[in-house]
Length: 306
Image (cartoon, rainbow, N blue to C red; front, side):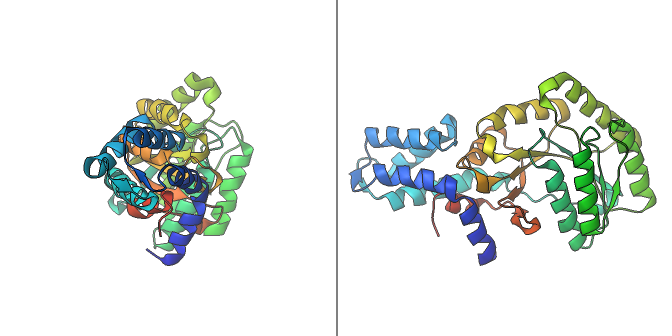
């Protein structure tokens, strides 16, 4: 991994790591690893959004070989980083495109404001730069801004965008997009969707309809259902993943806005609880600030280690 990206990741996770590192340093300055210290550490990890289950697992792993021994804060952070890596490694999987699908259809879901449209633009840039022919579909037809944003990404990346008037039927748009993608021999079709969770039933019914229409044209599609999560929502991410997973069969996650929050630990909790692949993470506004997720780099950055 390039030093530049590790520096960016570390800087992006600095709010999260400062919170965790500060807490750990306060507890473990020349101290024995006793029950009180473990309890305090558990509280720090829960406050850092790693979740109760993960916090217990990590403190137990630390206690296994070091209980009742003097331990420094750096040793604690090193062990925690190694244990977090073990949790994250199975989910660190890039989003692979299978050209034989012609096109490989990725349905992108998530609540409004999570960064769906921007994520689609950044993925389009990444895939087109690696030599794939990419198309985008502006399926969030209720938000004129989302459609405009996708068109801007289309201009920026040279990828075609299928769009309709505001309020158009999203399922109909998905249908047209697949046909157009086939006619143009696209390798990848990225379909944006609405994310208005306040009227959950309507939204979920609409997403189910979009999927039914996709399956009419391509029975094995969508080939991926990528859920975009805004890391700043912290623990609320759990209920969001549950809702979308149960309704539309989410197959993988993208986490955005990690640089804007001290809640970066939530990714570890999500990996522990749902075991869904984490394909990409974002630590900034620029297209290059979104990269495939790497477990060890993330764990070390979270624990403030070089």
